[in-house]
Length: 233
Length: 358
Image (cartoon, rainbow over all chains, first blue to last red; front, side, top):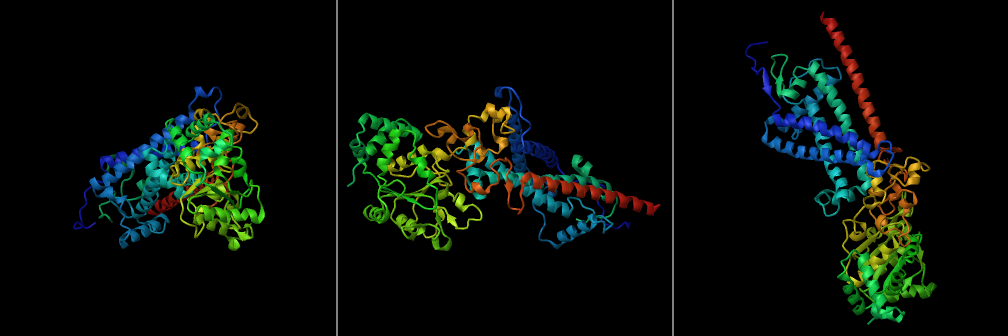
């Protein structure tokens, strides 16, 4: 390695505390939402005895709604932090889709994951392919779930509620009827589950094989590198 | 000028006491404060009777059948006379040309002052030839009658959404009232249901006639007083749902004990109607009380939303019979298998390259 190459520090502070906190809370909320959501559609085996002795569906639905609020408020906060935080906090919401460099990066990542390109690139933030999936499936998917979720919730809180006014009043007629909204709410849950499976696998794989830290960065916020070559982004 | 409602009632031998009773009952069924009873009485004493033109398109007459079984007998008598029902081909005495002449007579005589009630819908296919009334396509009669009416009531799911004749593939192009092209732009009240509840129908008519304005409608044009809540929200079996007590099989103990029909595909949670509060046949029962799930008959396109007996219904967007959980489960399985295969290849390649480096 030549000594006149651009020096990059050993560790770069990439993910600030609010971003890391949001990541963990969001992951927790998604887990609770997916499990309880599945159970709302396909309830557990019936309990016996008096109805007044049990509140199984009640608790499951409560957990779902509470986690839903955390997800929604979390996303709002995260959007604010994209504005208030550092440049890496903006990546998720504003992928540089119009630059050639970005798509070249996506193509390189595809080659890398297809075992064709042997040398992974070095990124301070997210790699372009990851960003593409995060932006379109996680961010837009979560937004879709929040909008349809509040629309379904607003049906229960009633026509005078803000949930109904802001969401149910236009979402339900847009889809046709409530049952359609339920079906789409389910489908996108599965899309997010698929994203989560791939996301976890790739994070572990990149941690082992790529040239930068992954899992440790998720916790500490600092990105460290395995070699001194300049970053690609 | 026409007689007032009150004149008609007195002529039919209804006492003033009974008339006032009717007014307070109507106020109650409309969800209005007691103070509205005298207003209804005043309106009925002073307003001329408004004729209602009741047309039938593609339909099964279940709306009419429901209507004439309105729970409160006085309400039925009064409203039937209130309606003046100058034209309703199912229950009127005249027939043939004589009957058809009445349509023209009402339209001419009460221009802009009659209410058009539409039961059923108009098929647009083959220029409307699938439904002929008096030798002409029904859609023409509908457009003609709508031109000079005050307001339109879309009775039932047929007129409101299309119902069974508009279910896929809808060979006759049966079209609900609000989607008929070139129909006069009049306010439309949708009263969906297959059929709608009798008391809901009479209450909507009473409201229109006495207050001379439309009841408050929701975003989809249904009277808010009857269609603002789901069956599930007011279902007497709701405590079993919250407790997690479900009917799992049609003949199990839970079915006998009247537990929640959610797992049997009850559409109560997605259906807006008043069945669970007003019930049917003078408050005797409603589908869920009889042990069968709600079919969602008052919802848009309920015939095309998959099985009546499944909670997570099939979706047709993919051209295959599968529900969201099946599609999603398969997708998640494929992704997991892909991840596992990819991890395997990664490990293999790594072992290879490490072998080469040694």
